[in-house]
Each structure stands twice: as structure tokens, then as C-alpha cells.
Image (cartoon, rainbow, N blue to C red; front, side, top):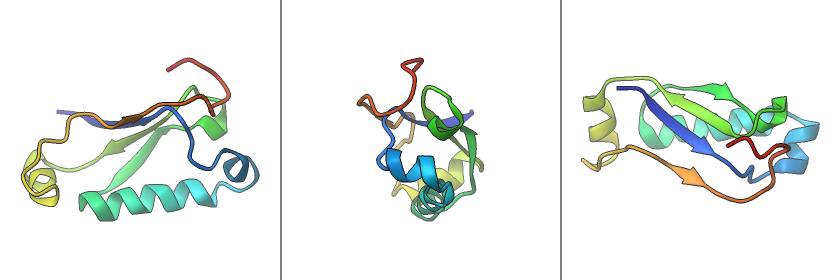
Length: 86
């Protein structure tokens, strides 16, 4: 199955508007926590309604990285993104 993490409220909206390096840092942190490669699907910085990250890797790898907890959805809410599409 496809593993998508959706973040509807950027934790660093003003910094992300100035420097996309913060987006890369967030992606790298997710990779370290999950123990699997993570790629951007969309970003608030690019005018999308939310940031979405696709977790690449097998379910077995993700289960081991999360201590056996099923990872299905991670969503933060708020209103810091430029649009309300998500």
C-alpha cells in the first residue's frame, strides 16, 4: 500500500517561504524516524494546500521502524498553509 503523510499546517511557514532548506530538513527527520526513504508529493511552499510526504519502502520495513505500530495516517491541522485545499 501507498504510505502518505499529510501535514496541513506548516510548522515553519515564514522560514519555508524564504528558504526551502527547512523542507529538506523535515523530510530527512521523517526518513530517520521511519527508517525508510521519504519523498515530497506536494508542499505548501509551492502553493499546494498541504505538504504530503510519500514513504517509500515495504510494510515490513515500516513496521520494524515503528516498533510494530501500524502507520496509516499522520495529519496535523491548522491554517498556516496558503490555501485550504486539504
